[in-house]
Image (spheres, rainbow, N blue to C red):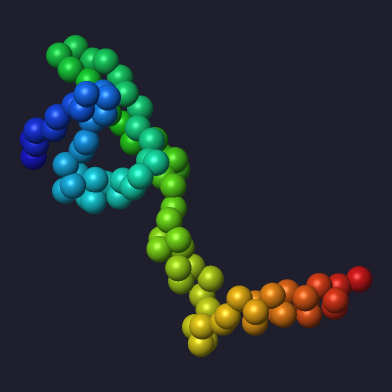
Length: 84
């Protein structure tokens, strides 16, 4: 699907929302820019995508009740004391 985009006065190109979402592009994602005959080619940089906190929620596999910061700090202190 071909879509039109516009370049800002600062030289910034805003990709259409549909394309950003379908490719998983978030703020800070990197692309390679290459001049090709007849235009410009944008290529996604693998692994360069930055993760947000929302992307990482649930990756720990913890399924219990939410813990407070005080609870987490206490558990860290308890674990640190148990190490040689």
